[in-house]
Amino acid sequence: MKTRLLRPCFVCVLVIVLGPLARAAEWKTFKDCRYLPNAANDGDSFHVRANGKEYIFRLYFVDAPETDGTIPERLAEQAKYFRVGVPETLQIGREAERFTRQKLARPFTARTCLQDARGRSRLPRYFAFVEAHNADLSESLVANGLARVYGAASDPPEMDKAAVQWRKLQQFERKAQEQKVGGWGIGFGRLNMRSATQPGPSSDSFDSFFNRKPASAGAAAPSAGGKLNVNTASMDALQNIPGLGRVLAKRIVNARPYKTADDLRRVKGVGAKTYEKLRPYFE
Figure 1 (cartoon, rainbow, N blue to C red):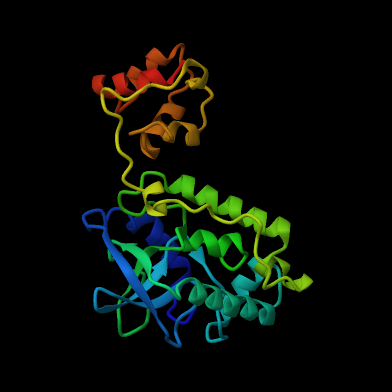
Figure 2 (cartoon, rainbow, N blue to C red):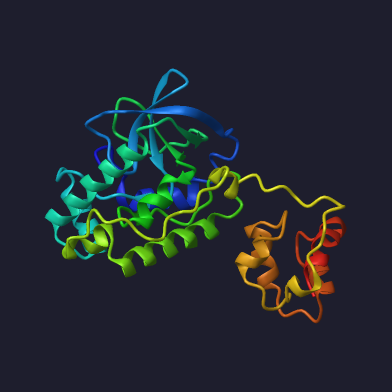
């Protein structure tokens, strides 16, 4: 990358600052964005024109390798991650830049709350989610072995399932490693190969991360066969319940064991109304 992250301290910033300082910020949706050629662009950070204004966007959750050797310590760190030499890491970075440029050749959508990503350009750099061809760009880079899962499993403002997305990216990374594609296959001549496991298209991938609507009083409960065991349900399964986010799911797990699901009433944050909405989802 040519607009750089500050290494150790930036990870701390992601963990500590990402949520609290930006929660007051409003998410903006920029449609029909245009990729702007720039010497500083790379796989995960690039110049964009949106609504007649130039921005630099930095993708959440991922880190594509460097495209030059101006920061040797960071390049060495990335080489270690991909288990290759520095020259090969530079090749991966350049392929990631080419991949992103091709993905963004047509108009695309970006979502940002203008959260500072600490670039070194004259323009401020902001974190963003970018959707191209009905798929999340971060997922596409990781799935094809062209970026690592990186930063911290921290919560962008209002994102109720950051940990779930983090694990999803790790699954894409494992598949890329197994299939030896992108950086994971550079030693086998497979840098330009694409994974058989691509992020699935959706009507709006951003909505899979955000804005989950709470269940209404009349929402249908799951069938008996699909109900959860309150003592064994995973965090993922709990967070799939409409209106139940990561914090409350963690409280439910930490309060185990329960005699019956009726004991959910004793979990902090589960008041009478919340209990009425949650109870039908459990045995």
